[in-house]
Image (tube, rainbow, N blue to C red; front, side, top):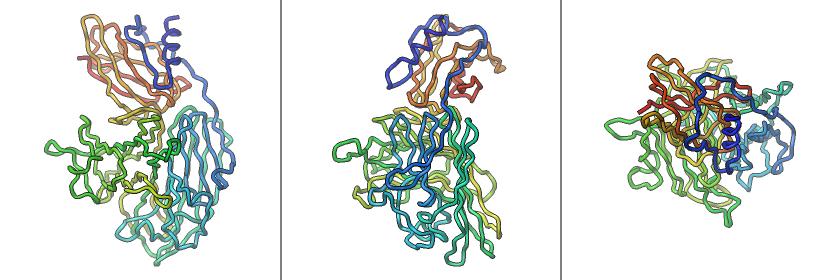
Length: 451
């Protein structure tokens, strides 16, 4: 009955977040216990008409995505809790362009991929049109646990280079972790120096507000620290100290950019390669990441993580932010190419995003303070999995001494943890881990030493 009471408290709080109440007696059970299984909807994929396009819609009950094969196989939409901040430019809705069109300056919005490096190939000068052409679609939708869409372009040529593009999107049951595999292949006769360069465009205005006022949008990205300062490259503002959008105040090695319709472009060479966008009004949070590549020469000289912000709002361009990830530059022989696996995540939190794990994002890191026979534990998070969380106390050797009863978590609600629990002799660290809807451990959300 005690576990039932705890789960009910968490599950019935307002939409603003999931909270564990202070001083819940006997939160720790003294054993691992059995995690609670949670019902999750199967994945669905269907053809729809959306904003004038023939689109493919995918949903798992937590998030909803829409892809348009005839518009360069772009992903135009990623909703959580009915909110969608992927950009679609109003004047481009429903339009399609032929693959051989050289009007590559068209900007639909959403997510798409190009090739670089920029010194050779600008966004508007590509060996294929990233905005046009009907992509072939292959579907794997027989499993309830995951659906995969594979989009493949025809080869296209420009300035002596011929390439083809492929995007593979995998949506899984019970979580908001989307696998995005992108590949460019050299179809020409000569070796091609190139990199994979992808963009996600975030709408900085809110159509639900009168006059489409700006969202309270912040972008977070890891940056290295040297000589006590956060290090990042600024392209379009020579004096970042005078740009009020840049916020270096977070204690973590993370830069915050609070978008205010001032143009900027920055890059980071941090050891972690991710970018997060947060709408502070609705809690809509989107993260894109890929695993760092360490071989020599792989990282783009300006950094693998870049963010661009537009400085005006009109029907043909608009106020938006581009989140960019770049692979390294490689020379690809005929028939070879570059593939990167990108990870997308969606959750609900009000920010800031100070850390990323496969289980979620941290807004306020876990703290554990001992007061005599009790430990006060707190933290604030956005989770990626529908399931449960549990606290574990471990000793110096990392052995678990005890674990809490399950706490329900949901990506559509910010997760607030605030509890007072009994202290356990020998416990030096508190670990917060997440289990999926089947009761299987996903990974650690956070950990903290008991102070």
